[in-house]
Length: 534
Image 1 (cartoon, rainbow, N blue to C red):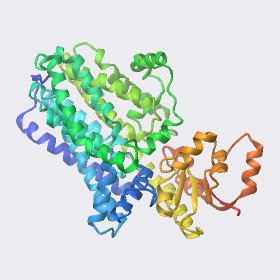
Image 2 (image 1 turned 60 degrees about the vertical axis):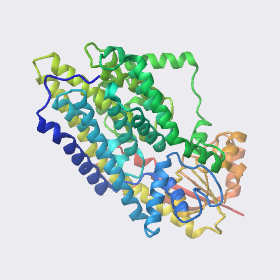
Image 3 (image 1 turned 45 degrees about the horizontal axis):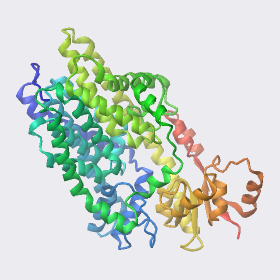
Image 4 (image 1 turned 180 degrees about the horizontal axis):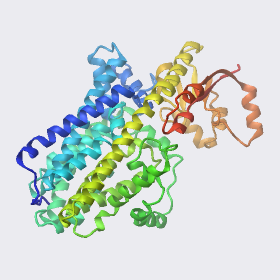
């Protein structure tokens, strides 16, 4: 499992390679944060919980209501600790300290990816390609700085792969600690490390240094025990505190998500590496956040890369670890595309793609004396990823300035005009508006609201039906969100609610002449605030 390549780099490159990768990744992420100041919507959902904990109101979104309104234990506890230790003086200071930790974690992930490639005996170029592709992936960089927990997940996953690459010398307890770190970062991360463990067990006999399937099973068994021991305290505490260990956002999203039958799922899984050549949710692995509105030729460049990575387990003369990670990538992407494919779910799959493509590059360099073609292809892929990162930084700078600025203004307006702290607000974008209004939020699909879940189970997912059931004081909606064919329901709504304020940033968006991904901003350019007439 740790073959030695005849093309290994000189010792100086080995020694300073991970350090250079760390420094460059940190510099890229920090520059992205300073230029865009991007603050993801979901960060403010979680931070409202963090702030309540830091100020003594408990780990709750709405004071007095124990709703598990977040998914990442680490993502909620670390900002709470930072806010508490700084005496809750400044939300800005808390965010930047938290950003510093995620940026360092992102640098650690890039350095560990380099170290993995070195451990597997790959040459200097594949090492640099793997780390470089990760640190220029637009989604990975973005979610490493915008308040999400993504960078920790990348770091723990990379460390877990690095530990497995040790072969029979791997420490099961260290591996279990990495797995526990992933679970503390996001509870569904077992899909990623479980996929890698399965791939290792299947392909272990291909490598004489693996110790065979029995050794792999024993290693993963010890890791599972260590992982359970380290994660179980949170699991039990969350169950006692919230009444369920399952985060409320998972319950809310699962309510309207229906998987196809087993036969369809099997066919989709078996054909995924082939279907990756055509449009699909797998485009998200290597493309920018919310790709709509970008030139279509970009997708035609990205699809071959992900398709090669998904099919690499079947290519001849591949390093066993390329097969392991490729098969794990198929399982991970299959899991992701059968959920709502939100972009922040995909950076771990992007990191695995970087490693698989680096392994394919290593095989190509070994198999041919004509190195011009593989070297040119690798350089083109890095140029492609770097260009998307630069363009994404401009797009997200405008998105933060215009769209998120307007959402914050809506929250502040509601806070100023509310009739009492008990006023309720029905809306979808919960983060900024919920945090800056500090009001009782009845959000769709119910990330922080048990009332919305109950209403959906009773009347379905039509917004007007839910509003009729809950009768909130305020409604915040995009113009297209309250459409229904039921005219009686329409009449009821207009009889009971009137437009209190309009927020529209269309002119500001139109004033930005060059804007890749413009539809992403346009979809959030207008919001209507309605108030109940009584």
